[in-house]
Length: 608
Image 1 (cartoon, rainbow, N blue to C red):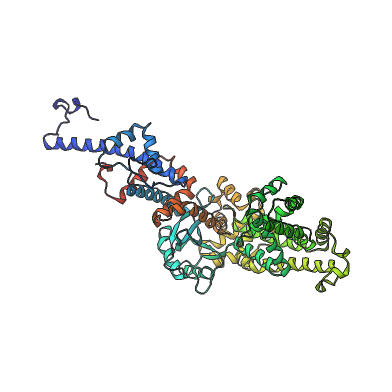
Image 2 (tube, rainbow, N blue to C red):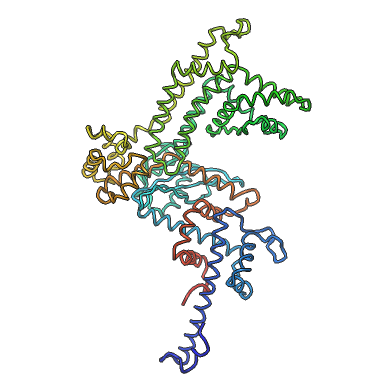
């Protein structure tokens, strides 16, 4: 602040007289006030960022001065004011801007979201390629929400996936309406020139090559290849494999009853816990990795479950319904066919669970996922053998009783054939079905033959014979991005020089290796090819994760939240790592404040 002595005639700057000097004094006072207001606003920005990152609600039901719970935003700021003189002074003296109104909260949330979005746009501007992952869900207010995730390789050589926002699509969920919303909201990301892949589930609205979303996007972004989410496809393989035979349908129907039985009563659950048995997970029909957890839990806790049901039956305080169900489940566990199916699917799910987890990882590239799918197919074919069948059959017979030893009169007419032969045929049929489903569901892997160009496992082979078909595949789909002659030369150098091949690990490691060794500038076409493969997403699992955030943000008690506020809060929550890194940059507060001032002309925050 300017002191009295500084304003005396003896200290005035030459040339400042009369009205000019008065104006100078007013500007100095205004800028001092702006400085104090911005310092106060910085505190509000921190509070808003913290609540957004932690997915906490802002407002309270009663925010009056007499209320004991004014909402997290007011309570946080008032608590901080006890230890912060800037906040305390502003709350006590300001009659114009207290920063506590609902509109100020919304403007701060929007400003933070816009700052983060601009940072993502800045990174994408430097990226050679862009892919998006899109899916739709319904929130608690029965409003259809379209979630958009973008994927790219940043300037440091790291594969990035970032959330863009939730967009309201209840007005029209057909392909044209969804396309219009995407086209409108993604203009700032330069997607027409850079979009190389679009990943959706298998719904006709999204996947149809004639009039679906993928076709409409490809009409304006010709290089945007459609990728059917690997996780959805694997889910379809497992669900179809479980529904193909009546024995499978009966087995999974019986299996889902175990979790239901124990979830309906705390007394039943106590018996389960006393036997040292793990909690049985609930079945989710659309997520077969959840079903695999039930299979694994029952298989690993087989003896404990037997003991649990025997204890329940022996308990004299149990009601008739519980006793009847417990007797039925005990008979199931002692039934050879149920146990045989249990261990048949247990060995299948032990491998599919690994693949399912891999394809849902953010940094996983489509090449590695493709190799894992191929290894899964090889595993299924390997298990389709007499030795594998004998192992499962012997285990089931040991835990129950071998059906071959049963007297003939106890068998049904449909089971008069040799029991072991019947179960051998069933076992082989299940594996045959999976062996047929996997190539059919992943049939478009052939359209991605160019992935073999950067497959470290084939470098030695390609050093001898250049993969011409795979090379032409990348030129056919993405030829406009490459100098074909130089790309061919750089690939040949890569295949022949082991020092350039890094540790032959995953693609994300290879990209970082090239960046660290500054090979991205020495071999630009090769690095661009690696970036292309890294950009193409194999799964829309990132979108599924955003749905979980949506459920936490828009809950039963927060179901009237506006669309803009919802999308902005979701961005702050999902991108909390990026937000925290931006908070450490020198110009963070100024950038957020600039966006905040765009919402409304606030003279008290603008320097003259």
